[in-house]
Amino acid sequence: MDDLPPHAAPDKPLTPAARRALEEAAQRHAAEAEAAAKAAEQGGPKGLEPTRFGDWERKGIAVDF
Image 1 (cartoon, rainbow, N blue to C red):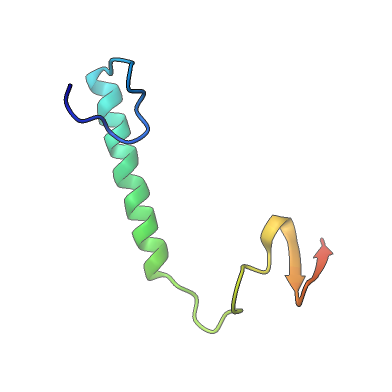
Image 2: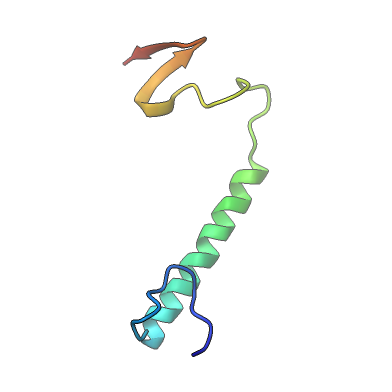
């Protein structure tokens, strides 16, 4: 069996269209990760993102909007 794209079911035969879709998705995810790495915030808060879980968190205090 030839190489399967990431996230492909190992026991299920893939059609050429499905294989192409999985490969395109992998390329798209790689491009998005690369773009996110290039667009790093400058002068932003240190540590975790303060707007996790839909709340604004600052110094351990969370404020729900």
